[in-house]
Image 1 (cartoon, protein in one colour):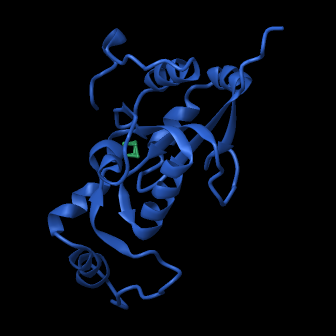
Image 2 (tube, protein in one colour):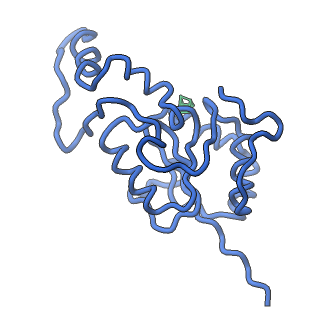
Length: 186
Ligand code: SF4
């Protein structure tokens, strides 16, 4: 008897990014129907409001840099429970746009600049321990926090590039972004 291959468990994760990478994922349009035939989306900001990252995830696309303590905690949970972690987009790969705050050299100067120097009225630093996650001193790319298995560059990566990576991973193959010049950044 031929065994039916187990359906893949796919997650997408949103750290410090603009969600543009997720919008590009949605640009897969009708291929999302094919994807739904091959995989269960078990965690994603575009598919459900599930609060807790599940166990035994096969593939996770992680968008965004690591900017605060919530990002850090979630990313560690994702790594512990995911077989193939994809650094999804330029913010995940090299901090990119959220990383622009790194030039101010620390969380405190960033908060002072945003909430005191540039305030029109009611200048005050946010203070809600346990409610607002603390900023990290620097925004980090994903691979500086946990090991990454696959890099998917672009700001955002095109839908075609996302499809190329997912098609390979769904077949337990290593994606080849050199095909069709898809290795370019930007
Ligand atoms: Fe947005 Fe670009 Fe960052 Fe993706 S890589 S989250 S599109 S800024």
